[in-house]
Length: 254
Length: 366
Image 1 (cartoon, rainbow over the protein chains, first blue to last red):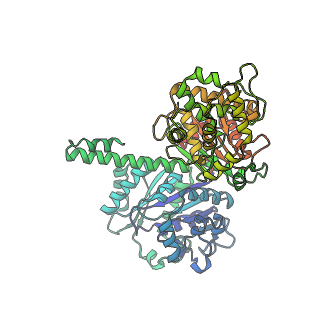
Image 2: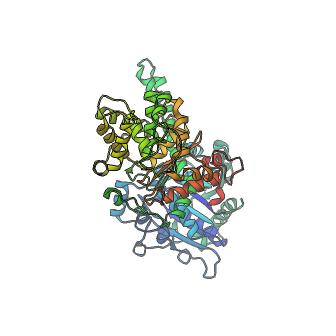
Image 3: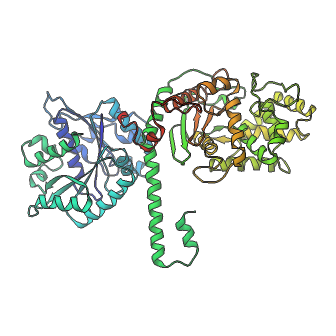
């Protein structure tokens, strides 16, 4: 049965897109068919991680939401871009949002029918026969956040170990409960070297009463790669890649 | 008015109470937004979405063309909306597109006539017997001179005649107010259709005069015919008619606004006559196969009421030979079969409605 996974954080800069790209690629490396939709319409960015240049993407999520194309026409296979081997069983697809200022302005001004987003996700899963659909969201709470939470089989909330993120995560969890989310996982990112990851994991789990699926360090290795390329694919033996595999297992097991 | 708003009007609360009430209101708003989003992502809406996709390509049927305004309808328009008695709205396709209510109005005008005069008097003017005759037949019950039922044109004109009011304007206003209670929003008469119906409605005029001859209608014939043509020319969309059906299903109270649209004593009359006569002369077969009281209109609408559960509204202009929307019939048939909505069904249906509405059913569908 296909699964929808939403990656969300209350505040920006938590490393949401990076996390999404790496987790999606990890599952694709396991032989899964994985789709990623960039619903961060106001500030799209995940296409960079999949080395997809805006000039190559004439069809975007925006065009679908305006009723110009079907959603699968906005899906680009990025398996090779992400560095998946030629003979890989799995594959990766990305539906990017437009980075044109005009397109962003138009969708912010006119809004869009949030039902189309739901129907598009389903169509994409069907047409591309996906095992997993990842939804990368805009930080904070909005209609599309609500939708992506309500639709998802697994919601992953990313937080950094600081007070503002703790508070925001609590708010998002309230919303998630109201939306009867099926499975919620937390991921702690950008953890300073001097913090003990296990103690932090335990503390956060106690505070929220939810599972922490992974703890990720503030990593210079990852920063060096910046927003270009998928870390897990390039450095499969790195401890960060191993942590992503552990998160993938938790998602894949049921 | 929410509790929070009501509280702030008393002017006696302490600031602490205000903040708590404000908080409750916010939670109410969170719940309401969460509910509307849950409805969008629910397995039930996904089911409707699949039905819509399945029947959109259907090319059968023809758009009504007895007046030019109806012939302009796009045959591809297709909307499906379901409203539960809890007030949850599930809509797919062209649910905002306006069209004229046509014969669907007849069931509701009948309800208002019952409120105005009571069952016995209304029944002395209009019978409740299904007829095999066409909806526009010029025929009355030979023994009593009454039209056969309020759903054929003769019966609907006799019913419109019963709507109280000092003049045509007041009577129309009362009808429009009634539809607003059912749908929760105000409605307009679409002038081009009204004028077309009025200028070409010789047959209906003949029916009215025949009934005047037998004393079945009062002598304000022109005013009543205008009212009848106006009630048929009211603009609605699929969501409106689903809401009207849901209001009947909810015992006459609009499930969203909680405003009563129809006296509880007459809900059964309206629904019964929909079941026996609502689908023109396909009503008997409909009652057996679909088993959901329904009323169709030549504008392409069908509204169907599953008592205590939900209302269905479908809109698609192409009609079959009997004057019912082809896609609308298909949607009602599938809903009835898959969720066991036939009034007399006792077998376990393929899908359990409550699970699919709440989001627990059909998760494999993804």
